[in-house]
Amino acid sequence: MFKKTKLITLSLSLSLVLAACGGATEEEAAPEETVDEGTSEEIVDFEIVPEEGAELLLWSDGDQQLEWAQLMAEKFEAEYGVPVQVEEVNQEEAPERLATDGPQGLAGDVFASTHDRIGRAISAGLVLENFFPEEYEAEFMDAAITATSFDGELFGYPSGIETYALYYNADLVEQAPETMEELFEVANELTEGNQYGFMMEPANLYFIYGFLGGYGAYVFGDEGTNPTEIGLNNEGAVQGMENVFNRLRDEITPGMAAEDITYDVRTALFEEGNLAFDINGPWAVRGYEDAGVNFEVAPLPLLGNGENPTSFSGTRGFYVNAYTEYPDAASLLAQFITNEENLLLSYEITGALPPRLALVEHEDIQSNPISVGFLEQATHAVPMPNIPEMPLVWDPMHAAFTEIWNQKVDVQEALDRAVSTIETAIAEQQQ
Figure 1: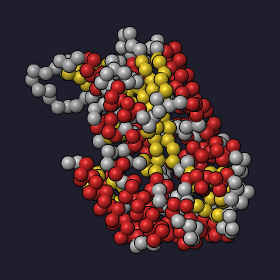
Figure 2: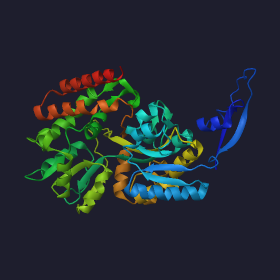
Figure 3: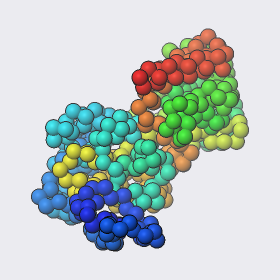
Figure 4: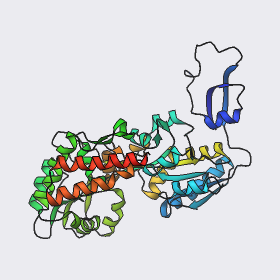
């Protein structure tokens, strides 16, 4: 059982304390201030245990994620005696379903979600805080904790982290380039006819962002939480566009319109052996393996300023439904399925990279060079903002990138216009 020590007021019910427990340390729980007359406080030791008669519903993605979730349900019942039913619900859809199914008692007690989709549900009060924040903050990657937090409070139980990295065709390239300058040099040599040295989607902020952030750009201020401050048109953003984006357009894929360089186009080229360098995520691994490509994965090369590109990271996590009848049992389930043993099982079954620090150096992961490449890049990644204003960013930046690429519009002018559009949309949303 998980034991917590916490300072409580005896006039409060123990059940309320359990539901709100954030896990103060013993040092924090022993203030020296004099307690006001009329109140009585003392240190109380207690264990978080499942409520009597608890039964849980776990929402999980399908395929291998569903297989792993069903195994977790069996293991949890064996250890805690609490039956867990597993239902397949896409993690992209779970937060929206929670809004409708939660109040009716039909939603999963615990559900999976990507961190950038969960902000609205949290701000609406649909999600309980993580019961064990200190433990998670100490044992998980900072990026995963930031991603699954909201307004400074940890809500998620991180289960997987992903970002994009550099794929390279090992039949065309002997080793990964260490710098972007080296990448451009090799890509130039390999670009001829139907073969390309390097290609990436020019209008997609998700992939472009790393090269802007590495020069000092950012989406929102205060680590992605302040929508009144936008850093997508600052000096760093302009430098990133000029040093990477424009060079890619002019040197590697001259004459190609932004609309011609889609995700499907470049993945097809890589699968055919006609693309040396591709920037992609772990979701592309299986397709490239099935196509028989001899490839490796490495962190993104250093930028001209010597900094690492700050790729966007996405964190998959489990969250506890605020409407659950069994908050203790549900929180224990979320903790259980994200412990070290079970996240290693998740990696073995689903391939999801665990954000637990202890597992990064695990021999099963370190023996897989592809996993190592992604994890190395993940140490330089930043979480996509999860605040409700983030969806308003994508389209204006897509438009700016497209006109810079196709029409060679001045970078500063195009980025200023995009940020102005974003600011207007945010102001209208907040009315």
